[in-house]
Image 1 (tube, rainbow, N blue to C red):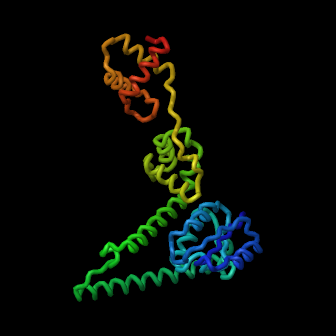
Image 2 (spheres, rainbow, N blue to C red):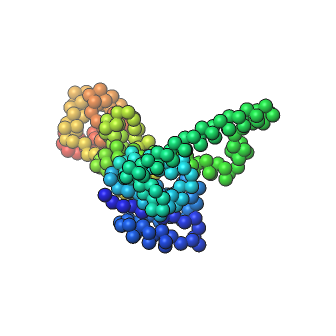
Image 3 (cartoon, rainbow, N blue to C red):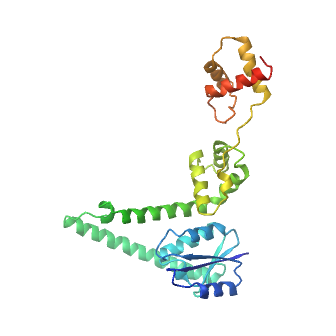
Length: 292
């Protein structure tokens, strides 16, 4: 089990020294330090810390408010850790999810949060009904007015939610990507990831974007994004194309491509469609190799 520390202050003028001392004193072998507002959900260092934690590890903070300013966000982070079979511990609060007492405290907090959400929903519905009766329109006025700052806040929150969802499920797809990339093209890797996770279908574009997001956040190696090497067509494929041309000397490149697709031959660049340019290149290689 590894203790991973997270320390945060809101401004550059503040110091994390006291938090770092407390985290080191309990044996944290790695500490992630961040300067950002606690109310900002888009915290890249926190995302990296959550991505670093594996099964059996524990995320440790000096106080709960260093991690989250709202109960909802705290419970969201703890649920993410639970899915990874990891734990959470706050040094200044009675929360340690590796102990029965800490789990009980967390359950009480969760019940309180659910009660709070129910009250908020009830008040919101009543407020909207009263506003409609007065002819007012609900919603975010900043978004309705297309204010740049409001749009940026909403976009940042959505990006953070998407990143946390990727981190939560990374163990089901990232090891496959690391095993196959960049030696294999994205289409093949996406098929392998989808086969290992039948409930989710990954396209090549979606998978490559997920990996690029991880690379940007420092959660994955940049080498995973390197272009896949071009495949060299085997001599057997050159012989097949040469045989077609010998049997039908006037056969067009397009007709050869269609015949190769009908035979389910895989193009050098992968996929199922044969470009005419690839056929021309292989035909030239077949001539140079003496097949024609």
